[in-house]
Length: 637
Image (cartoon, rainbow, N blue to C red; front, side, top):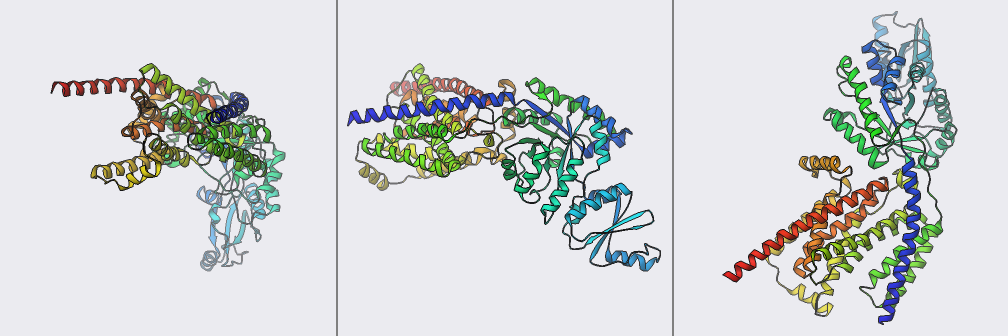
């Protein structure tokens, strides 16, 4: 029996080594792809450029040229709407009933028109503007009519057109040509419309091809227009990437990005509401972190102080210059974004990575089951893994990635935590070994999900909450049965029969509250739980260390785990052990942020470990001093 257990351990270790080797091979490719992905675009806002142009009495070309010199590369242009044109005084609008009323007061008020109550009438001057609007409406609305009355052009559409004020009516080619001549590329934001047929998509894309200097395509609304498959087919000839705005999910965009072979650029911007409570210093830090830590390669920059355009001119140029300087100081280049390189992929490579997870599972099960059951389950896992990978490769990869980040922190704690006390150097060594075992799970997970789609956050690791919670539920069960001298069923029965004290109820409620906060804060899902003091502390760490370590690792997990490793485990220390395990869970799940470059994750883990060890040693010395004093008082008393 002992020989079989020994063989199983060696089989498990061999499987882990195989999976780890393939993961490291894929990791090298990922590292190189991230290293080569260094160009960043700085995009300014079209409406703000127009405002500055009027305030400074400069042409759009001149304004664009000066922002280009400051460091900007392009301009983001929202497709115009009827609402925009109405607000800007470029047209006026009357409902059919309103037009009829005006004619009843003045018979010379556009007498050529016979108003219909079921229609909306748009009155504008200027042949070029009329042509652009009319052509756009023809491709989006079935019933569009136009007549001329003197110098006025009148367009009518059915009254039942929903939300007509936000209906896109194209771009000003003349103004965009000026901006492009000034040196900035054009990034249009296309609006959606109802019943986007193939014919209307053809017309819209033909209009896009006529725009000067288009460097990227973006969308403005909650959903992209029309069918993603047809849209992808028509966008391919443009040979420009699609922009995805961080924190703004647009229905259909992810599917479109996959169909365009993941030719995607991630864009970060500070929305208009956030701008009101932000400032340039905070914005610079946000842009810096977005580029450094989240593979953002385009910054959509809105300028501060635009309520006073005269003063905002110099301030805006200076702000763009500071952003460019910050990026260059990080080793980035300012210019057109190149596509992120693809990583080598085959089911065979992924299969071998998954074998490493199965190896970890064998070692894990060996703690609980008889060797023959462990062997059978390991074989079943291997066959199941191969079958699932063949039938549903992405589901298989995500499932085994989740298993990797659950199994290895548990395996690390179960292997390294013992009853016996250790010296401080041995306790530190044990913590390093434990972290190394946990990191194997992280590396296997990154190997399984080594794909451009995860690096660009078109897809993401699934099961974050489960990965943080399940190890905390499994580990107490293992240590309860391992360190009890009774038979398992008898031990469980005795626990269930034991009286519950008030302090235990209070402790249970507190523990549940701690776990709830822990899970809510996981994955930045509840930013309101992060205090202002903690935010300032994080900024300080970022400044001092370049990459901020996870607070729950270096301030909670690693120091408390070091305490358990030093004093040895007993049931009274279970809460401390569980809090210590949080450090290992966090260490592994750091790498689940696959849009974060590997170099950043490595540095974050390194800082978390050395800081956690230093704080842990300080905690040990304090606890040892306090325990020594208590013992002396008891002896003296």
